[in-house]
Image 1: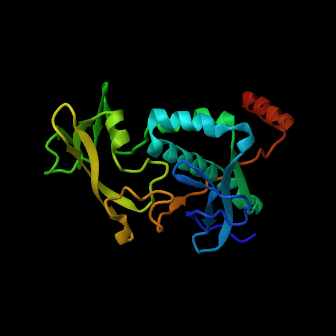
Image 2: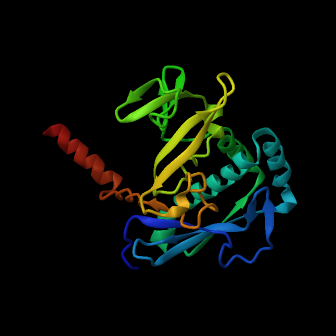
Length: 251
């Protein structure tokens, strides 16, 4: 097998190549969809696909999540669930030569999807005591800024306000998005935090304000994933290790 060059590149594939399933829609996300995984030099390693069994009816449970958290949060949870599963299988698939992996959404996956829909992960969240702050606040524009952390301006936020911000979650945002700019909108006591700009490390104009830098958003979206080194296998049998420890006790 050819040497794997790191990091590998993960790209969204709305058609899930090689998976012959009828097209469905699960809220805003079309199924099946998937991800293609490429070596750094462009050679394809594997691809993954996502579907679900209609016979067990997870769609009804997901509909309840939609009512509680909204379409955007549930769609994002589905993308994040699939991307996390893809990243977990990259190591195994890349090493074994496996070319296709299908992830099927079942009823036991719904609690995981709910947890993802209920909470947003963001590297720009900063906790201080019981309070939460946004470190992507746009300095000089955001009037709610209360301090700084190194080079970042801090503005008060909550998990609810973070959910309404257009910055994609940590585990699905494009690896090339940089310098997001977030500010507040609305009157005091009823304001929201909004993503109003971002930069692209590759200079792509599709970045816009950055809210579409997620799978199924901008076509140029991709994730760079480093393969975790394999744990070394034991070089000695248990009997040999025991003998070595007894020897050390006598030294």
